[in-house]
Length: 95
Image (tube, helix red, strand yellow):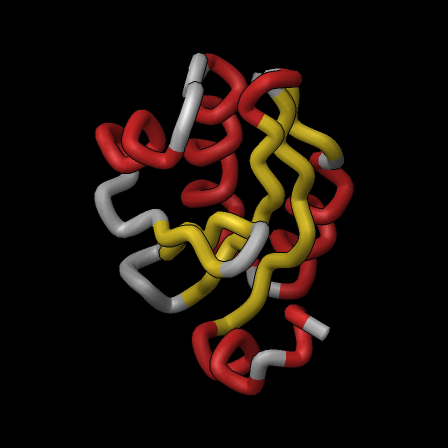
């Protein structure tokens, strides 16, 4: 899949150094994936959840949330945000 934009991932890595490896792994897997629907995503990431029009991935042992918009038909993933669990729980990302 085509991941747009890696810039958001890099910014999160700068802010949270412990995300460098987990986000690199997620990016590599996602870029090589051919997901057609959430069930395909869950074969790779069992804890991925659809939340409204977004898909939320647990990153680094549930410490962080990666929020993306999946466009399966276009084979694209749009990065919305990378947040700590606490930031995600506040819900500001979804407004």
